Length: 369
Image 1 (cartoon, one colour):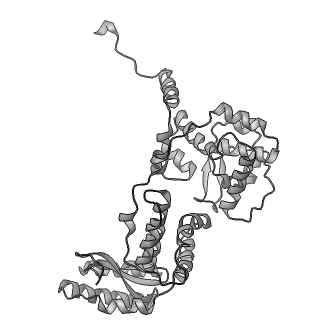
Image 2 (tube, rainbow, N blue to C red; image 1 turned 120 degrees about the vertical axis):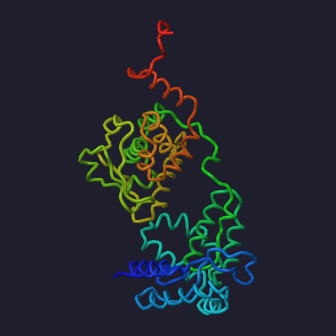
Image 3 (cartoon, rainbow, N blue to C red; image 1 turned 180 degrees about the horizontal axis):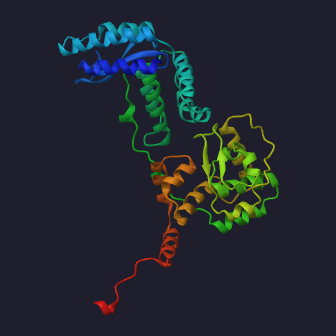
């Protein structure tokens, strides 16, 4: 029986015995989770969900010990005799520096299926600002968050990273109240390029390799680094449906062209990658593309090609859940981001398409009134 099954079985037994404490695993250690009285000095007044650090390894013997501890704590809670004293000292004895915990957390994150790109952008970017040689505490994490500007993407990212590593380390820290109200919907709408300009720019580009990259971004709405992380054999064989490979920001997925005519007009089956260093991180590979087109005076931002693909699929009537899946993000992100950017031009075009349908409903005849 693997460790996950052992923990699940232990939790089932605890539930059957009406013990309000559960086992959970983070990294290679076991923790107890339940509704406990506030820790001394926490400033909180009422019992709330917390973790207890046991310092027990996640193995068969550890599960047995942790289950016994959970039963003992459950009894103390029932008698209102629970005390934090036995559980606070081990935390101090086993304290580790921020640097050590970040390394352990990274290994745990990647082992669980996270990508290096997401780690670098969403976790390491804020966590590197912690004092690496100091013991990681809730106070340090709070200071990290408060050093960012409220209601910004940076603040939201700092809260996410701080909350994740706090959970991993078994710290009693919840950054939800500090997160603010940042949302992609608050980003100002842009006047995106129309498809005629996008096509015109393609034919103006002189460098054939970068022209191919541009054509792929326009036709498939890819992130800049993703055009370098494709199943190129499939593409060169003429498949218009492309496969984004696993080692990208959001993992593998299939993407359909919009417009499919651009696949042939832009000669996209003739793969022609620029000679850049693909051994670098996704972020740096993508930056190479962004920098090239910025240096060559692209009349709009390279990422606008992705936004235009999203809005184009709306005009075509593609279900937003399918469009979101092809873009590699959630339906919520898709809706919040792109519905906000639809202009009257897009509404009018969609309206005209609907009104031209031969099977659309018609008003009642005056003769029947």
